[in-house]
Image (cartoon, rainbow, N blue to C red; front, side, top):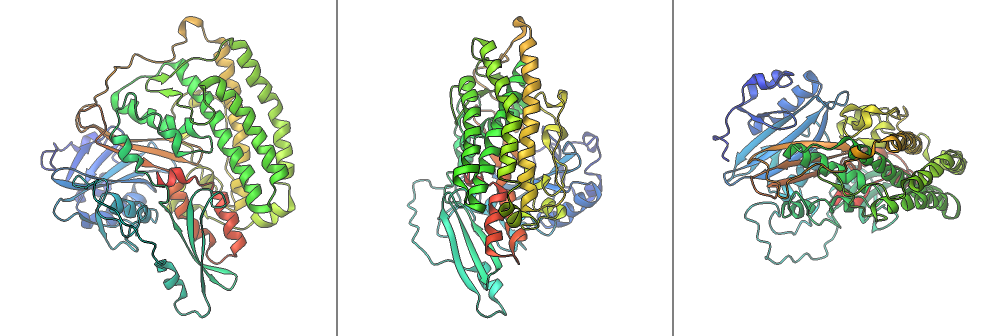
Length: 551
C-alpha cells in the first residue's frame, strides 16, 4: 500500500474530536482498529505531539512503532491519556524510502528518546534533533537494520570488544575534576537480567548513569512476524517475563490478535483468564519482593525464601491448571486451552486453602521487609520519581502507581472480567523506592480478592455453559492493512502490541511495547545526584526483566 493509495478517512470518523487541535497539520487520515490516526509531515512531529499532549490530554506516549513498506518508511506514535487510556490516537509519519529521515519527538515526550533509538537501530529511520541517536539493542558495529526489507540476514557480523564510548561520562565530566567511570555489569542477577550500567561518579555521588541494554536481544518481533497468528506466536510471550508474569503477556497477544481478527471470547473463558492472570501477577510480585530484600539488605535466608515459598504455592496451582510451572502457554485465541483440572472440587479447595493462609503469610513478609529498619533507611526518600516525570518517561505499572499515577488498564481500559469484579487500584503518593515496594505487596492482596471472586463464579457456572474457546478458524487472515495497538496491565505495567496485517496468516509488523523498556529509561532521572547504594536500591525497585526490555 502506498501513501497516496490510502483513502483518506473523513474527520467525522474521529468521533471524539481528539485530533481536532492538529487538523491543520494533517496531510491525511487512516483507519486503525483501536484509535483515530492522522498522517503528518516529519518536520511537524514535535509541535503535533506537544499540541495533542496539552490540548487533547494525550499525555502518555505509550509506544513508537517503526516499519518499512515497499515505497516508504513510517514512524507511528501511539498516544493515550493517563486519566483515560480509552482516549487515544496514532500519529503516522511517513518518510521516503530513499532517505528515511524524520524529526524526533523527544522535546514533547522524554520517553521518545529510547523508542526512536530502537526504531533507528532495527528499522533504519534517522531522527533529526534527537539528543543521542545511536543504536540501543545492537552493537554500534552492527551492519544494517534487521527489520528493514533489504536486510541481508546472511552477512557476517564481526563485533570486536571495544572500549566504552563514554558519551554520558564525557558530558558529566565536563567542568569537573576527579570524576571516575566504572562499569556495573553486565551480569545477572544483581542487575535483574543481563544489563550493563555505565556509571560516572563524582566522589560518592552519581554524576551520570546510562543503562546499556540489548545483551539478550533476539528480535522477538521478527520471530513473531515469521509465525502464524493461530498457532505459532502464543508460546513466545511467556519468554518476555521469566518472573512468572507470562500469562499476562499471553493475554497481551491474545487481546491484540482477537481485536485484529474480530474473535469473541466466551464469558467462562474470560473468568478463567482473569483468575490465572492474577495468579501470574502474584508470582511476579513475590519474586520482585524477595529479590529486593536480597538487593537491599542481603537477606537471603528469611525474606527471599519466604517469597520463594509463596511462589511455590502459586506455581503448584498453576501447574495443575496449565501443565507448566513457568512457560505456561495456557491462552489460546478465542479462550484457553482447557478447563479446570478434575475433580474441580479439589482444585477449588486447593485455591481456597491458599487464599485463606495468604493474609498471615503477607503479614510475615511485611514484618521482614517493609517493617525492616535497614530496608526503610535505604528506600524511604531514595530513588524519588515525581508523577509528572514518570508520565514524561511513559512509566506504567507499580513504578507509575508508586508515584501516585492512578493508571491501571484493568480498570481504565477494561478487558476480561475485571470490570465486573470488586477490587482496588493501589497507589502510593511519595514516588520513592519504598512506595514501589508497598504497591507490589498491596497488589498481591488485590489479586487475591479477584481470584476469590473468580472461584465463586467458576463454582456456580452451569455445566452446559462452560465454553472454554470460541470457534476460531484454523487459519486466520485479517484483511490487508488492518492495523491497531492494544495493551493489557502486565506485571510490570502496560504491555502493548501493535500489529499490521497484510492478508496472509502471518503479521506484516509485530511491535512489542514492553513496560520495563520505558520504566528503565527513567533510571537516570531517579538516581543522578544520589549515592551509589541508592542507585542499586532504585534499580531493584523498578523490577525490570531484561527479556522484556531487550525482546
